[in-house]
Length: 173
Image (cartoon, rainbow, N blue to C red; front, side):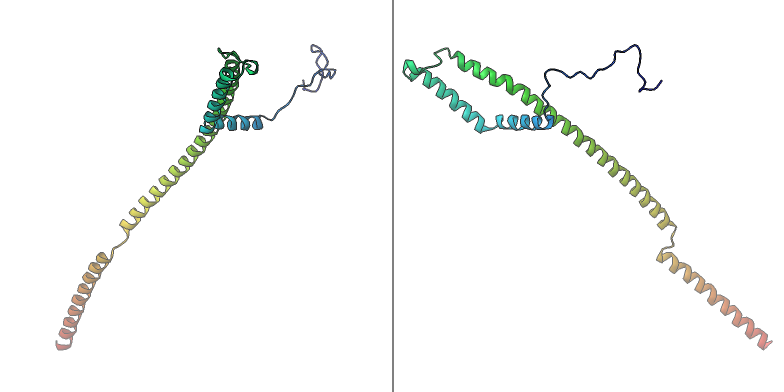
C-alpha cells in the first residue's frame, strides 16, 4: 500500500493551524551568541565590571541617604540579580561548550582521516622503496661490470694468444 493513499484508521488532517505560532530562531545565531557571551564572561574585563557593579551596589546601599537606598543590608535584591545572572550564564556556557565539543569532534575526525591517508601513503612509499632496493640489488654494479669485463678481456687475450700460436704452427708446419 502506498503512502499517498488515505488510511481509514487514522483521522484526516484538516490542516488546522495553531492559534499561537511558535517563534522560530536560528540555532546557529543563538549558539554564536552563547559562545560570545561565555567568552566574554571568561575575561578580566567582565570580572572587573562585575566587581565594580557589586562594590558600587554595596557602597550605594550602605552610604547613600536612606531615601535613596533601594536594597538594604542583607542585599536581597543584589543576591537575586546575581542568581539570575548565574542561572542564565550556566546554560549559555554549557551550550558554548557543547558547540565547541562538536567542532572538536569534526576536527578530530578530519585529523583521523588525514592520518589514515598519510599512513597509507607512507606504506605505499615504503613498498616502493623496498621494490627499488630489490631492483637495485639485481642491477649490476660498476665494480661487478669492471671485473666481468676484465675477465672477458683476459679470455679474449688468451684466445687471441692461442689463435696466434695455432696460426704460427700452421704456417710453420
